Image: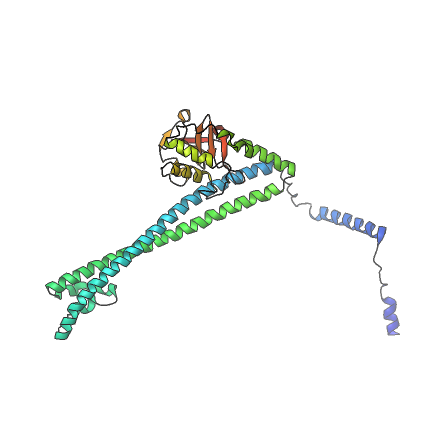
Length: 359
């Protein structure tokens, strides 16, 4: 009986809906969910609309510009890190040389100590000077007054050398701290560049093929035209400056770089960023320029735009974040941005910030 009552109250097994019935049920469920959502979420903010193609393009432009600013900061930090590395290496070598000289002086002192030991008159000052702990020697250098003339000269020499080694090692420690800071700065700027370029690529991937083509066309026009503009027809006439001059040599090098890719941090020979190109061009002419845009602008005589001549460096944006090599007729050769190779471009396509005559 109990089993009968339990089976009598058991709910009948439901069969899954299929076909039109299933679609009707799904429609009703979605409608109910939408109604419930509208009630429960009445106070919630609506979802942000997807950015328009124009907004995507504007944001990508900003990201590319910000990446270029970060690139120049990276270049500056890299140059400072290289300088700090050379300083640390030089100090390490100097400490090693001074240690060798100290060991030679100690050897001479050791010969004197041996003679005294044999005679049973080893001076405490000699014992201390031969100690393996230079700091202990410096702290108790009053023993020096108890040595004779010859011992006094040797001990003073050792004291001086130990002091010099201590100073060199202290400087090396300071430079190592600076080097660590430069490397941390390098990492920060490198991360910023990669993040901004990755964000730009993601945004560009949201554009349709037609929208992407329009973005590339506008960007190419702003930076001097597409790859077809970088053909050798502009080169066959030769540099605008005198070919034998340094400016002519720099321009000739830049012409030879046309078509090579933009790569942040690159200084050639197969890829360049903007300041890497101008540095390499003038290096080919025998002139050493600093690495970054904001140091290159002070590497020569500042000139007004009205006095531009072939070979001058032209700078753009308020933060001096872009540079090109002027070739005359209102044009320059520059490395524009990621995805755009070295090319010829009008000077008036970007906000002009100043110009410098190198030589």
